[in-house]
Amino acid sequence: MLRPEKGPRSGILLPFLLALLLPVLAGCGTLLEIDLRAASPPRDALVVSFIDVGQGDATLVQTGGESYLIDGGEPEAGPRVVDFLRSRGVEELEAIVASHSHSDHIGGLPDVLEALPVAEVYVSGYTTGTSTENALLRAVREEGADLLEARAGLRQQWGGATMTVVSPPNDSDGGLFGDANEDSVVPLLEFGSARVLVTGDAKSRAEEYMSTGPYAGDLAVLRVAHHGSSSSTTPLFLDRFRPRVAVVSVGADNSYGHPTPQTLRRLDTVGAEVFRTDEHGDVIVTIENDELDVAVTSP
Ligand SMILES: [Zn+2]
Image (cartoon, rainbow, N blue to C red; front, side, top):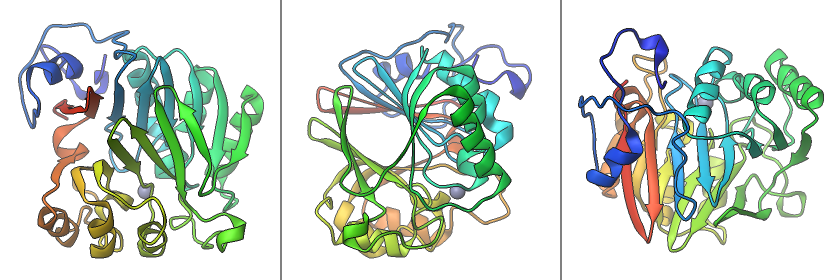
């Protein structure tokens, strides 16, 4: 079930089926009595699920029968991430990308590593030595996953999509910025003509690096950096990447004031349609036959 912790509800939205019916469904309170378990998405689509983990990030990528996870929220969000993966038919992960070592991104990953077979875990190489980071590294070791560094230029086939890391820079291009947020691993997914960018907590320096590099270009979907903080999503970045859909992963009434009015204004200026996990719950984007659908669950 998607939200066992949320108290009594008479049913659960089935995001994918609703997406087929309604191209864009926002803030809908419709309830369907349908079992979500083992709802695997079609193999020939790219499905990117921005999981509602409160203040934090967790993004599931499914394509070609393969599954990948980018971040896993705070430690207390771990069980919810595992439940969500299972609800989407995930039995194993080809790889996890740990964007950076802050707890709102990697805290829930040990639960995922314990629950499912995971082949590889990618990190930026910028270490903080925190207990959260150590817990992740211990889980990687104990579960036998390979630990690898991911820097700009790394390119892999993720099922039917091509994944290219676009930041942080590799050593021949200046190396790490020396800041956990700026050094977030940023995967770019390309699927047909559609491009999806998942930016971790990258800030203005990383955004400038990406904006002036070879991977700038229009986006079907942008996972807005750093939960909509005003120090990210700069006008330069938006000008170079031009998102059609922008997803903010953020907790309701968070103490940071995320997302900031400035960021929301900038996104509006470039015509991006904004979805927020605090308002929409899980945001599930399906790209198939060059068409893009967005489905949401109410939080
Ligand atoms: Zn964060």
